[in-house]
Amino acid sequence: MAAAALPTSRPNYILTGIDNWNGWYPDFKPDARADDTWSLFDGTERTRPKPDEDHVRERLRAKLADYDAKYLSSVSMPDPSGPAVLHQFFVTLYVFANYYARCEHEYGYRRAFWEKQRDWRAQNARVRRANKMLYDRIHPSMRGAIEDVLDPAEAFRELELKFKTPDNLIVQLARGKINSLTLSKCSNMAAYLNEMRQNAADLSRLGHGMTSEEYVTEIINGLSPAYDDWVEHYNEIASDARIPTLSVQAVEAQLIAREHILAQTLGTTTKGKGKGSFIE
Image 1: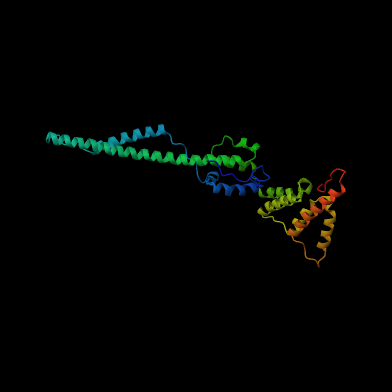
Image 2 (image 1 turned 90 degrees about the vertical axis):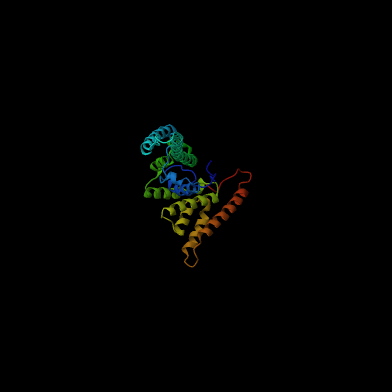
């Protein structure tokens, strides 16, 4: 049974390297729990070896031989000095009793093997599902590292050793993503704000959240020169103690509206001259 299909639009759905391990891990873990495979990844549930049927036959043969020896030594044959018919009756009863007890003993041992086989098959189906889930949730370039690893816990540890980094380095990487993000790298203002929001959320999960002022400053730092007049107006408002500070939501709404105005203006002024851009 394949793992449930999940939306690949989630930013940390695919592990791409050390830069998004910290976002990928808390995204992957609840999905694995929901799929009943997380215990296979964290090692709390060990994978069972496949029951060896040949080994079981040998063990069963040895156990039955041992049982026969103990049974024969503990049970006496009927006294042959009595009447022949009665003696034959007790011999037959003895044989059937021994046969029944032996069959019961053999069945009990075989049932234990069948239960082990059933449990192994059930877990093996989950192991295959876990391996597929992990394989689908990492970048194709990284799949070779775990392609031949059958134990989900070993495969997960392999990825953890390669891509999990110390917290201070993860914080630096998260800050670097925020500092390097610019509007020119995104398709439009909405995409820019959405990516900035996601990067800030990653930093917050590390315990290094930004204040509203810091967050707006990062947004402003990544804007293109086309927004210089808006930035100047924002700074005037921010420096006036009599005017309430704009919320993050208000800033984002103004930037979306400003983008719309710039698009209309650009469409008017560049008609017949080739299309320009206010993103760069």
